[in-house]
View 1 (tube, rainbow, N blue to C red):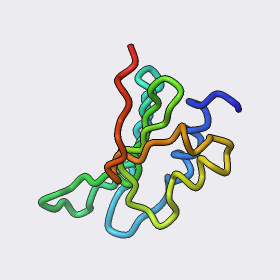
View 2: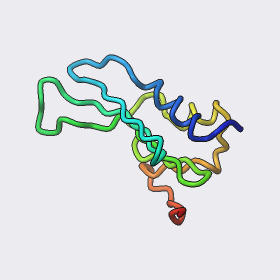
View 3: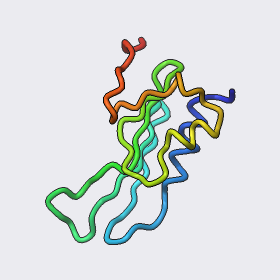
Amino acid sequence: MADINAIVRQEVEKYEGAAFNSRIIPVYDDLHRTYMIVSVGEPATKNPAIPIVMARVDGDRVIIEADNTDKPLIEALLQAGVPRDKIILAYMDEPLPEPSS
């Protein structure tokens, strides 16, 4: 399997694009291995920022913190070669591993 960080970032990047009444903001943090796409309402609303998809890499596992899409990130990661036992759906209350150092 290729570098898991590169795979996660590449697959999250695919969620960038236009949206109705919102601005899509990509947030990529390679140092902390966290990748996110956020929707910011335009015009501003009471809840202006909504995560579209957020994933982070902890050790050799991918933790998907948020997925508010009709094309789930887990499917893209599986197709990219990430084994299911290395993906944790935190937004679905799957148990998290002990934090790596």
